[in-house]
Every structure is written in C-alpha cells, then in structure tokens.
Image (cartoon, rainbow, N blue to C red; front, top):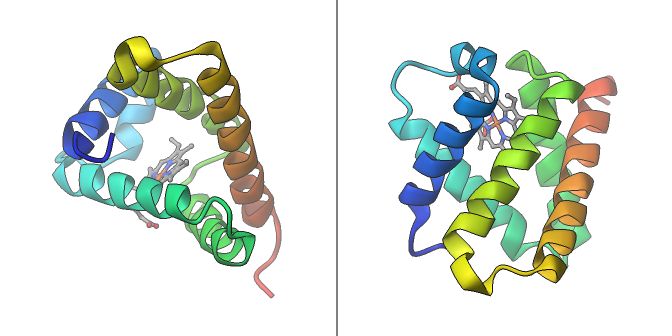
Length: 123
Ligand code: HEM
C-alpha cells in the first residue's frame, strides 16, 4: 500500500467524489498536495496504531482542524466507505473478510476520536 501511495490517494478521492459529488467543493481545485498529506497522515496513523499516547493527540488535532474545514460527523461515513473500497482494490486477492472487519473497526475508532475532538472546546 505504501509503495502505491499516490495512486492510492488518487483512487481514494476519485471513489469519494463519485460516491458523494458534493464533497468535491470542500477541497482545492488542485489535489496534488492533498494526495501527499493524506498518505502522510494515513502512514502516521498506521505506524502508531499500537501507541495510543501518540495516536490520540494526533487524531485530536486532526479532528479539530477538520472542524475548521467544515467537516461534520456525517462526512466520515462516505470517507470510510471510500477508504475501505481503496484498500480492497489495492490489496487485490489478499483482501479478506477479516481485513475488512479490522479496517472497518480501525476507521471507526479514528472517526470517533476525530469527531469527538471536533465537538470539544480546545482546552
Ligand atoms: C481518516 C480520516 C482522515 C484523515 C487521515 C484526513 C487527513 C487530512 C489531512 C492530513 C489534511 C491536511 C490538513 C491538516 O493536516 O490539517 C486534510 C485536509 C482536509 N480534509 Fe481530511 N482527513 C480525514 C477525514 C476527512 C473527512 C471525513 C473529510 C470530509 C469530507 C475530510 C476533508 C478534508 C478537507 C476539506 C481538508 C482541507 C482541504 C484544503 O482546503 O486544503 N477529511 N485531511
């Protein structure tokens, strides 16, 4: 997945904007920078998945910034669906029901921490 980084981002955003065209206008016209920052953030999340002391503050900050971008809780479902579709596509035959279950659960935690942080006042 990491080796295919930018292709992954391109696939992800194409899937997302086909799934929910209204989301397109939230992003800049040129998506090159966005592709890079998405892959960097996903790498950071995956590499700290077993380290809540690092992961939770990262997601809290990211969630608060997303609040500032106009992202609301309902936006997390289509993004999660596109992320799962992207992972399935690039995993090919290695994709399995177990992986789908684990990634769905992991994304659910990420989305929960981000949306809860967005709802809380900054301490
Ligand atoms: C796993 C969940 C997500 C990750 C890892 C993620 C990652 C990022 C990153 C790294 C940035 C760059 C700015 C920054 O770091 O503050 C960003 C910006 C942005 N994200 Fe997300 N994001 C996620 C979920 C979402 C969702 C659910 C939406 C809703 C549509 C969204 C919409 C946006 C928008 C609109 C921007 C700003 C684009 C701009 O104006 O430059 N993101 N995201």
